[in-house]
Image (cartoon, helix red, strand yellow):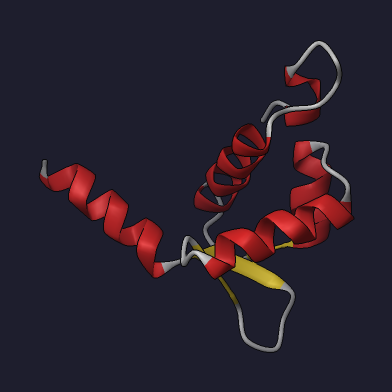
Length: 87
């Protein structure tokens, strides 16, 4: 996977690019994935990764695995995927 940090000339990707890259990285994993792995794979600082994950979780696109700092696809994202497959 390409680092989103290098996707722009100024060295930073937009918030939308980062969020989409995070969702894509989570979808690619067969199991829940942790912050350090996501941050390293995408070239995003852990602090920024925590913010992104928190926002995605608030909107139901991902879920935080209870009692662990790991994340998986959420119900809202699954609904989008099902709706896309049915259309």
